[in-house]
Length: 119
Image (cartoon, helix red, strand yellow):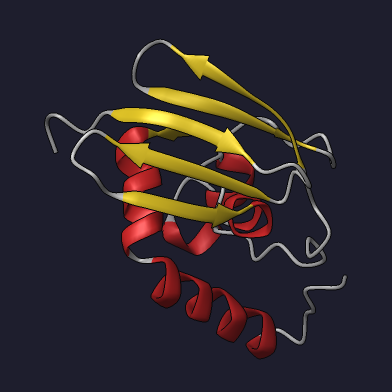
C-alpha cells in the first residue's frame, strides 16, 4: 500500500477518538476503545492467531498521547498505560476501512467468551 500518508491526526477533546486524515482524502474517526482492544501489540495479538487475546473492559479508555515513530507509525498511550502497539499508517487505514466488521467481530468474541465492554 505505497503512498499511504496521513495529513493529520487529531485526538478529540474528550480523548475518546482519534481522527486520521490521509492525503488521498480518506478520513476515519477511530474510537479509543477500538484502538485499544485491536492494538497491534504482541500483548494483544500474541505471536500467532491462537495466542490473540480478547481484551474486555475498555469502554471508558482514553488516549493519553500519540507519538510519531519514524515516518511510518504512531505509538498510542492509553490511560490504562498500554503503549506497546505501533500503529502503522497502513494498519490505521485498514481499521478505518474495516471499522464496522472488525468492531462486530470483537463484540461477537466478547459475547462468545462471556466478557463485557464494561469489564
